[in-house]
Image (cartoon, rainbow, N blue to C red):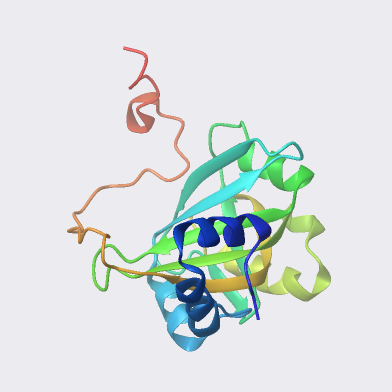
Length: 194
């Protein structure tokens, strides 16, 4: 069972929430995905990922795709495609230095429940995938209309709820997505530079 980091425990003591936190760890923290978690992930078109480099410099970036773009390989392993982007590779660079990754899935449109998944990640070119994943990811890549530059595979350390009480319920609207485009207008690249 997860009992929290030293920093978590120190703040819990300061805030008087030790018992509440202990109950949360006992009831909510898992080292794998259960069926409801897998179902939530399979419906998501977005996930927020957090990484940091070897010195602790952080990056938090969203990833998008069609529902199911995050592959649940088993209840302890996830994989997601890295599509063509701005070429900076901040998240992948961090993962190269420090494999720890945090992911947050939020169902903004139905339950407003979120799911935290933390673990260790590695990224691979398709030709470099470990043999036990290569045939599955090759098949997945063939069904993808967007060029997959790399695959990120995550070994799950912990999975737990993000409660829904403060999550707004949003409405899904149609938007034509130009996957993989380099069109500057479609990408809004100068939005903050005007």
